[in-house]
Image (cartoon, rainbow, N blue to C red; front, side, top):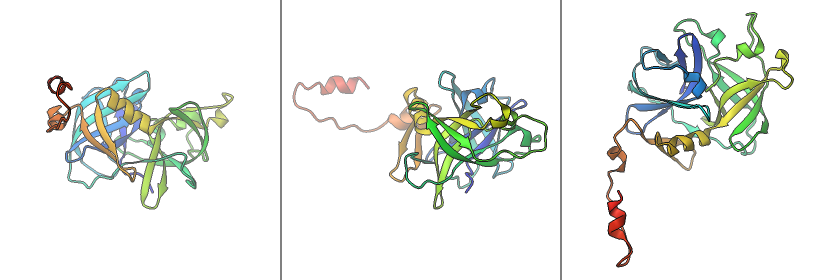
Length: 254
């Protein structure tokens, strides 16, 4: 399968990739990507291309960058009644995954407004720390252009690393960059990634999203920072406690 919620981000002549996640019960979306993919991004110069839809009208509401962790986010409204794909989070330790895949928009395949997505096969290499994992490309991006192997992979940053089970695609990470063991261009084939769940957690910690992961791995974004806080937090609260337990002080803190 090929994820349909993988979109192209174009800022000037630079191309990057992102993952589109819909806010439940709303036409607001969050694009997850790398901070370096949206360097210099403004509401005016950032162009979003939906490979699977033409003439989609959208409005960018917020652009967020966490440069220290290379996490980027774009909140936007999309005017479309399309039946959007659900987003599922995967588990790299799951048995019998088989082949991992990387989806993205390599710069050399882009021509003007013509978006061309490419999917490459990967295999697990090793984990650097809790958040970063390295995958090895099982194939090269075939192209007749006289560009280096590193240049051929430019544009994949922000793209998801995922695996498929049945008719569902499970995202485990996003691509941050490409590396070579010895600096030789011919083996420039290691993809450094950032864990997908860690991205969600960090965006939650800075107040950009509130999300839920269902039992089947579906990611639900319940609220994002463009929406008024009361859209989510206006709830009835039942406080139970004995006399003198501090119930009144607790309620006043909200």
